[in-house]
Length: 283
Image (cartoon, rainbow, N blue to C red; front, side, top):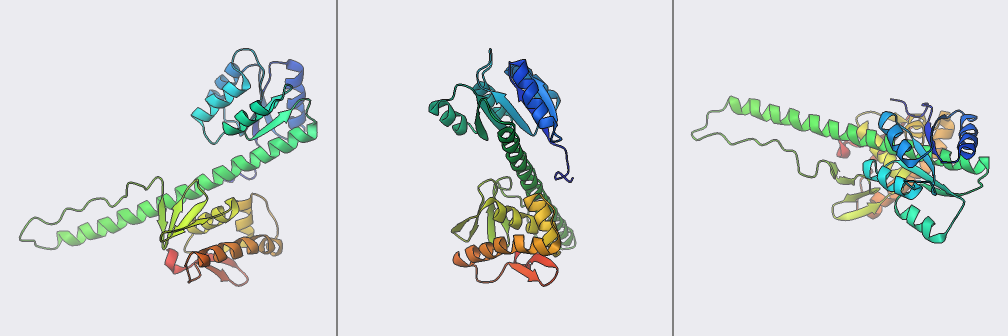
């Protein structure tokens, strides 16, 4: 699924109709699909029926406040992108909102430009999270399929062997941490932490470095063009020449961090004029 070209869906939550209308129109003018809710309770009902990439909500509302709505949303969907708006700003409320996982905190009256920029950043973050989940799912699927295939081969071989005693029992070799950590050649990947390790040496990665490695891992066995890497990892499209300039420093940083952690062999192979692939060590 190409999430880059999808029209984003935004939910505007405010008990004041005039503000709700104004913010909605601001976002509709730049092409977003916009839903409206007059209360936190109505917002939760709408979210049960439709998916929204970003929720933009006032804080002071009768009934369920914007902060309470944020808590409820994060309990149900930790990756949800929520932007809070308020005309009664306080440092305590801002700190609490960010602690609870708000993406941004806007002070009313906010300019149309500020609203559009905040929502645009939220949508980019939402799409990055979706891409990361898709890459992780692809890697898990590949590992799982390879594991099952290996087990089937061994079991078939055992059927042709006569044992004096009962043949050894084959357990499905799926580790307890399959849903948390993954192994890719000499690397251990920690999803959600932007971190990998070589042996017992942890390596902190930027989101782009992490997503780049994940995409190469999900498509190991083939060379991936720089154009494709920019589109799928960064979320926008450029020509191949510009894409090489965008991707090259991220690859260089990845290689440097791997080398500093003791990984001497180059896991990311540059195929000149085409793109990058993972070396056989990571297959």
